[in-house]
Image (tube, rainbow, N blue to C red):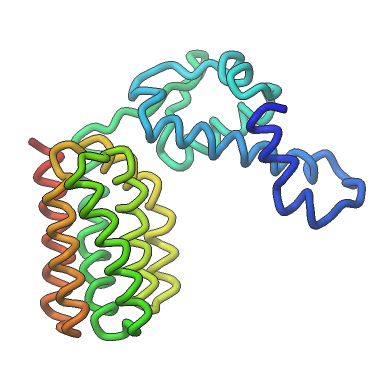
Amino acid sequence: MNNVARQWEMSPEHVVDARPATTVGALHLPLRQAVLDALRSAIIDGTYLPGERLVEEEIAARFDVSRNPTREALHALSVEGFVEIEPRRGARVATMNARWAGELFEVRAPLEGLVARLAAQRRTPADLVHLRDVLGAGTAAAAEGRLDELPALNTEFHMSLAAAAGNELLAGTLARLSDIIRWVYAARISMRSTRSWDEHAAIVAAVADRDAERAERRGAEHISAAAAAYED
């Protein structure tokens, strides 16, 4: 059985509800989600490069699925910003130009500053333990050159910080940006690996000290440094 089909068959929706589906959509949604997740990951990890054409037939063959879930996944990724679809020309991987990245950093800097401030004010001892665990894992991976592990660890760090902030709306907003942020991070990972985790350490130190102003400043500075590296 192919990987995508296995993901579908083992999905919670399929296992929990063993009754026959009443609609095609009820069966189709888990498969479409599996294709969506697999294709998004392939774009983030560089299997598909910015500007590369995405041909439905080839993608469907790669994941051993029909064209319908492939087409739906491509449209969903276009909404997320990973794919551009042009009339009569089809789909291609989006290109991360300077303006697009700049807008992302403009939105993210104040949000991450606010997250760090709230985390300093609201974090629990358990939150701090988890942040330090992720920080340790990321710092070690950067020092040992395990760059392939860093995008996921970076995402985990920032989502853990958001959880410590105790604001579900803020955490949800950052979660919706997390995959795009991971993609941008991966594009400059060799330039920012160790420095980025040093900045994370400074944020955690401020959160541990419950110094809200310093945490907010460190959070915003971290994103500003990432933006500067991206522009270089």
